[in-house]
Length: 256
Length: 193
Image (cartoon, rainbow over the protein chains, first blue to last red):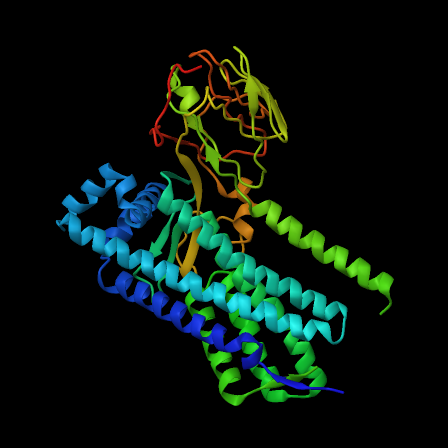
């Protein structure tokens, strides 16, 4: 006896919402980098990548939690000539954006975990175990990121940066790496990795069912997650957004 | 697939995941505040790809041991494989947190102009690769004067001179160390012990 479960019931609806939020945030970051950050910043970063990365890390910590870093706070506020209340408002906006995207990631990871658990129950195979491992990874990642964010909020964090920042504006493509705290970075990485593992398992199930549309969508999802892992975060998220949206719209399902 | 093959595949997957996690976890360091000795004590080094050794200790010389590091530290000399020691310096003092910041690539269709290529692959700042190959990406010399292969022994000495056990450098751990300005975060009870 086989029941068909659509993938949107499996948790891809929440994944789609999370991808929408992440893609919008990454696009906003790209636009800000394009329009606001001028070439003098790019040359400054190219001259001393390590100092630039450390300055960015200090600024990130200060923006997330201004009250714990008063000296950097006053320095940034006086340099860009914004009032302190406006700085606190910007900090609240940034914090709410961070909590929103990682909360959506956590919600999608939770729904995917329960959905994969329903798949895993009917045939207890090694594939189901792999899928459950992937779902657990995609659940652990946002939890780790949220813990890191809360740590930034409640304690006085000193950033330790040992790798330089890269930012290039003159090329046809922008290349940019920003130093973030390791729970956020590794958490994002684990989340995307878990989604890739689940996509690989669902690809196997869809190949068994000979659902070629679903195979194509799942291949796009896997390619997006791999691109995100090896560095092309924006393009990978756009691909994953397209794949999950098509999966939700076309009601692709697997028979378990 | 029989159960033996399934078990072997499961073990391989668990090993791979454990390796990835172990190579990417970086310790959070809790630092002691207000040590009276020289600047060397105030330097924290964070070792990527190594687990923290939590130093516990007591006494005047603050001998302590960690999970994978041993050390005795009036001046924080230690030995062991790796590890980071901290001493609580009595009760009630709590330092700042030092957290490693890892580069996250936002937009990188092609990395066009990297001045110093980290590894000769197209993805040079990948999240997974950078902790693993951290010994090959760092060019700057560390600034602390730790002993070779030193682990961190914590010192929870009761005297005021008891120093942090700081983390030495082993041969694989040539990375940049940042001097941390110590801030008191929680109220202290100096001299209560």
